[in-house]
Image 1 (cartoon, rainbow, N blue to C red):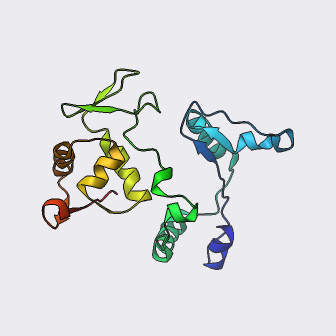
Image 2: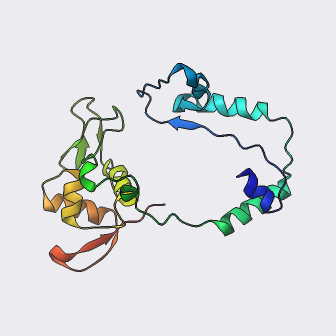
Length: 188
């Protein structure tokens, strides 16, 4: 990134990086030779403190507000969307993915659907919209279109009418009719 800025006529900019693990139950271990790794790999709870440390470690920015606005424009102009399948890139198939709707509260238990509500047997959390997170994963990992059957398989629900209600509640555009209907997923 530093080279890209210099190549595009911008002054040098300090670029700092982190790897943030979102699951607080993840255990981060390393071999003694990589003892400095704990400065780069952190849990999400440590992120605000780490950002403050980084802000204080940078004494003087050679990027003015004008340069920053121009850099944002140039970066956006040169941006190219990734043109690859994440599953293919990591040699995975849809069968390698965990199916179902996962509890956001206890982070791992699969929710069950009863009377239009997702329920967690472990923590008793309930949600009307928990499926949206799973469908966002589907969108990014598998594709932007989904059928009733694919939704049932991915969310681990058996009822075709429940799947139809979920799809209709999302107000998605679709094409085809009856069993041939395909819905277009869209997430920002």
